[in-house]
Length: 189
Image (cartoon, rainbow, N blue to C red; front, side, top):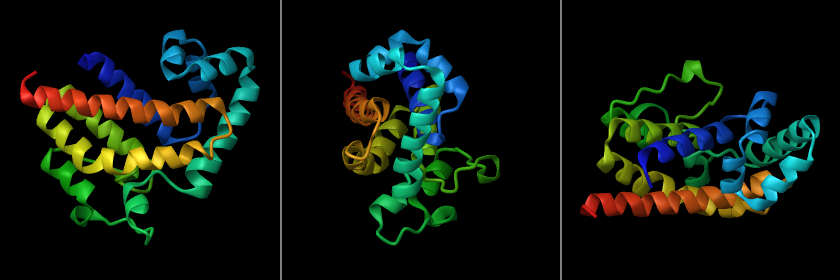
């Protein structure tokens, strides 16, 4: 797996998890056959036969139902039954960001938690860009893998569209493969 591919996939997944899909996102997705093939055959077929307005409506309903109304993709919400977001360096993710020189300006985003999946994926993208392999491995090991894999397994059953069903599977497969890649790099393979 090369870093260019990894950067692209982390950026894409961060965007997928950040907010409801807008019309530009849908247009770009519809016109990227390579990406659609990677996401999944069911998604590729569904997107190719659906018009943009139908996709916009279905994807927005599904995203809202899955990631806003039922449960938000926030590490502390998933791992801690209190549904509290720890602030500042009390939040282990914020401490990790701080230790790696990653600043999250919460005033510049609609996301309300620094440990929202979208921000965590963007953080790994930054670590890849910087070439910080040890940080990538540690963040995957300590943060993403422990909660995202079971979270996505559970969320798949809630998905009403092929896109979000396939995204759940794709994210699990990609994160597991990327973790193995980082393990190999750490060992010098």
